[in-house]
Amino acid sequence: MTRNANNEEFVPNHSIDQYITHETVRAHITVKFPSYQLQTDDNLNTIVQKASRLFSILLYCGLEHLVFGLIESGVSDNSLPYLSNNDLPPYMRSRLSESRSSNFLATQWKFLAPTFKLTREQFENDRILPILSAKIIGGGMSGFVHEVTIAPGYIATYPQKVPYMTLLYTSLETYDLGLGYADRRRTKDGCHSQ
Image (cartoon, rainbow, N blue to C red):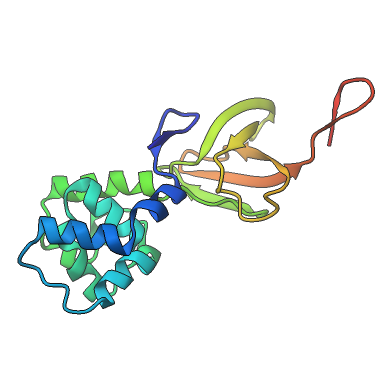
């Protein structure tokens, strides 16, 4: 786990990709569920290729026994996030207590840090952003502008440039983000130019 500027934990994408492999999933299932036979590699392929975050969340919550039923009912990483107990798949809702469902809903954000694009984006208030440090550089009536350091691997384009991002809080329920890049070079007088 990595901590962001708000001291919230998140799992970097590269860690999920590194640890959720055919070999590790097969080994875990063999040890945890010795009676379960992986008859084909279809479920294994689906977990690794389409449901690695879902499996990671379930594993972290001690709910990995639900993964095959969820996959068979069409749930994948694209189904995430779930915003309330009512949004959870029926297969999951019928097998979890209210407290375990709530734990899943809260935990999922640790595994769903967004990759930023050069667009204006809005995220749920619960979304854990992969921002390692932030400094207010301006503000006005509608919010504050922050210069931030984004965790490696969370910028979709132009990775060769040094990222900066303006972060504008426009409501209590969502983050409204405008992302840009700065090529920071020192000028003759020692100041940074963009």
